Amino acid sequence: MIASLRNLLRFTVHWLAAFRWSPRRVVIIAAFLVGFPILELLIWSGLLADEVLYPGYRRRKVRGPLFIVGNFRSGTTFLHRLLSMDSGQFTTMEMWEILFTPSIVGRRIVGAMGRLDAMLGRPLGRLRSRVERRWQRQNVMHKVSLREPEEDDYLLLHIWSALTTGLSAGLLDEAAPYVRFDGALPARERRRIMAFYRRCLQRHLHARGGDRYLAKNPALTPKLATLLEAFPDAKVINLVRTPLEAVPSFVSMMEFSWRVVGAPSEGPALGDFILDMAGHWYRHPTEVLADLPEEQHITIRYDDLVGDPDSVVRAIYERFGFEISPDFAAVLHAESERSRDFNSRHAYDATDLGLPPERIAGELADVLARFGFPGPSPTSATTARTQDPDPDGGAAVSVEQQHLGPSEA
Image 1 (cartoon, rainbow, N blue to C red):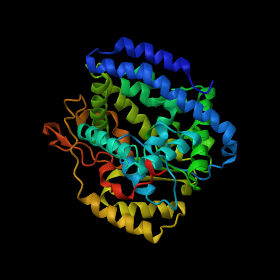
Image 2: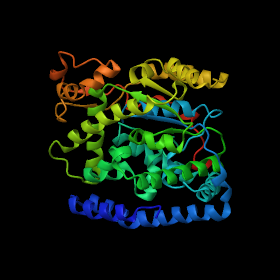
Image 3: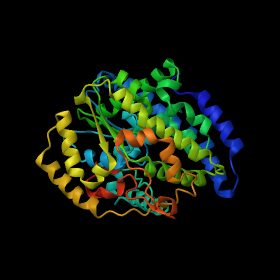
Image 4: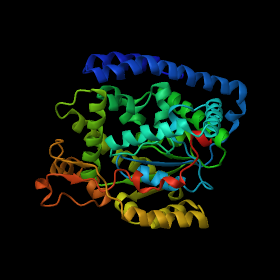
């Protein structure tokens, strides 16, 4: 079966057993047990309807897709949203498409609803904006919007085979196989997951048009070997940020997620898990990409990206043989100026998280050496709080130049 009901059942039993009860969290459980099945029934009805109404999508070629990979908190969102502004070159998925309408039929329905909303003065659009602003005031680490390009690993929620289900819910045993996807999962399971992912990309290209699909997806990092088997002509951008910053930043982000869903968070389990995960996610792409022709991959340092996005994007385009249009050149220049003025509100204490710089440097010494990252500074152990210089770059990208969303599809 395409969707893994066994995974879903096991997750539900384990989550309920580990859940910390409170009135707010009872609402979360109710939404999951009632709302999720209803939503998925609608989504799978749309996917099945595609087979009848739009069977031609299966013939759609996914030619030379571009995948942005790397550890979480390494600037993947910033680069993704920046490249997505080159709409003449790329097509990408937005959050609403990933979570609610992976089907062509679903997108047609939402498009019709958007046009009706516009005729009525956009009451639904204004409600969505208010809800998103409220959420963004609470979550300063990663700006989320239904109309923003987002990581397409969330597509795998529809077959309950995504890293985020276990990791975000505090069930690390559920997340562990997806951390080492290429080596941990049986070949049949990997093929099942990748077949569904490919069909989603074909549907997107059929519904949206465009020739080159663009994806930002840190969770593809441990899937690179399987991904390249499915898309042998793919191009890969591997973003690397010093683990002294990326690891504690992601632990801080996940602690926020665990608090929201009521997962237990005592002890060092989360920090230990993410430190081990990060080590594999630095090393695995290096091994896999070494076998690719140079014109199919490039490794970019986070500091270079946020310091001079214009030059980095031009280097990417030159490596892959892409052309920069005059319109996109102007966007690059404007975003480079804007990124210099960006300041994050995400602050964390790495030592309180159980991840002092000396520990990270000791366990990932080979990673620091491989990418030329400096070790801990003499004052790092006594620095109380670290200001994350850029929470994955999302806030640096102007809202005015995003793709069309549900109300304009």
